[in-house]
Image (cartoon, rainbow, N blue to C red; front, side):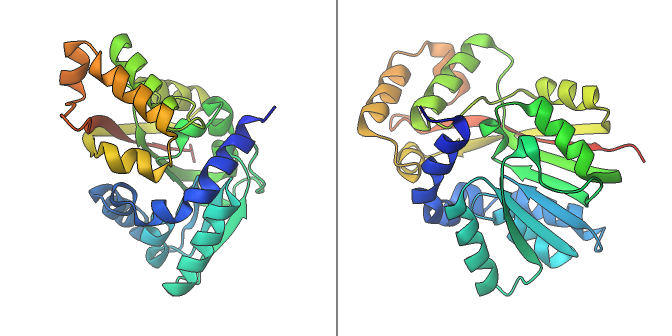
Length: 254
C-alpha cells in the first residue's frame, strides 16, 4: 500500500518535462507579480514550496539573494537543477522533502512562495505551522493555487474530475479556508485576489498522462453535469473549461 507522499513522487517523476513546457505553468501575470513581490527585497532568502518544474524559482531568482527549490519529486528537482544551470541561475539550490516536515532551521527564510502545489498537501494546517516556523519575523507568504468555489455542487464536481485526472490530488481549498488556517496559525495582514484560469482539456490530461479510462470517466461526468456546473466552469464542446485561481498572501508578525 502506497502512502500519499509516494503517490505524489511517482506521479510527477515521469512528467517533469511536460510541466517545464506547460503554458499554464510557465506563463502568467502571477509569475511577473511574484518577481515584483521579491524584487523589493533583494537580499531575501526565498523558499519555493512544491516547486514543480521550477517556474517560480526561475522567475524570482534574478531578484533574490538565494532561492531554495523544494519538492517531493526527485525528477522535478533534477529538472530544476539542470534548467537553473542552463539559465545561469547560480543562486538556486534544490532540496527534497514534503511540506508538513520542512528540514530547515527556524527563521531561515524571508519569503515563502508556493504556486499550483498546495492542492497536493495532506494537511495545510501542519504546512502552515511549518511555514510560520521557517519564516523570519516579518517574513511573507504567498500561496497561488486553483481554489474551490463556495457552492458545494460545484466543488464536488471540481474535486471529482481533479482526482480522476491526477490521483495525487488531495483538495482544492477555498480562499476562506486558506484565510482561516493562516489566521489560526497567527499570520497577519492577509490579502487575496482571484481570477479565472482557462484549461485546455486535451493538454490538461496529456500533461499528467491520465489513464484512458480516467479520461473517459471525466468526460462522462462533464457530459452528465447539471447546467449550472457547465455554465460556471464554462465547459466547451471539447471539454476545455475554466477554474478559479487565487493569490493569498500573509505576513508573520515581526
